[in-house]
Amino acid sequence: MEKLTIDLNGNSDDKEYIHEKIIEYNKKYLSDEDIEFINEDFCFTIKDEKGEIFGGISGKTKRQILFIDFLWINENIRKKGFGVKLIEEVENFAIKKKCKMIMVDTFSFQAPDFYKNLGYMVYGELEDLPEGYNHYFLYKRI
Image 1: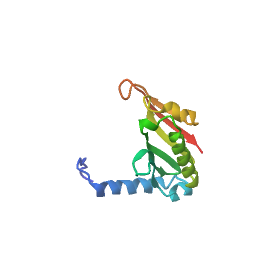
Image 2: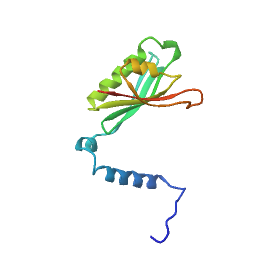
Image 3: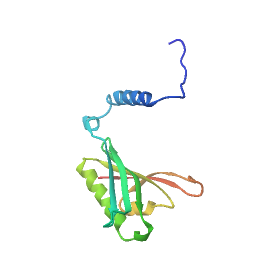
Image 4: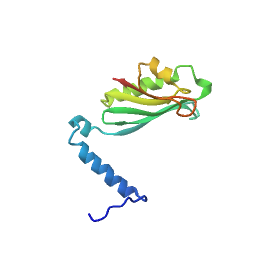
């Protein structure tokens, strides 16, 4: 190693190599359950008889944790229990997949109270991000 440089033009092969190396390192410390856990994407939707989407929830499982990426309900059907039903489906899915926890983040203008009312706990908060609002990080052990 005579001279090391930082290459700002990494590609997908470089990204995969870095990913493989961190997995190799992590295996020294993770449990067999974490190592053998199968990561999976999910997406559950609310549709009408024509197939039009009126809401949905998506995310992924990783290392015995289910991460909610997006939850959206059409404004015309909000406050009718569909969000709760989607969360119940996600929690059942997480249990089926043997996850130990669900994690989600949300903004103050979105749904922090919705998640709190369903038993999710705030473990982090960034104030004024985005400007004028707060960013909440929540989890629920299952």
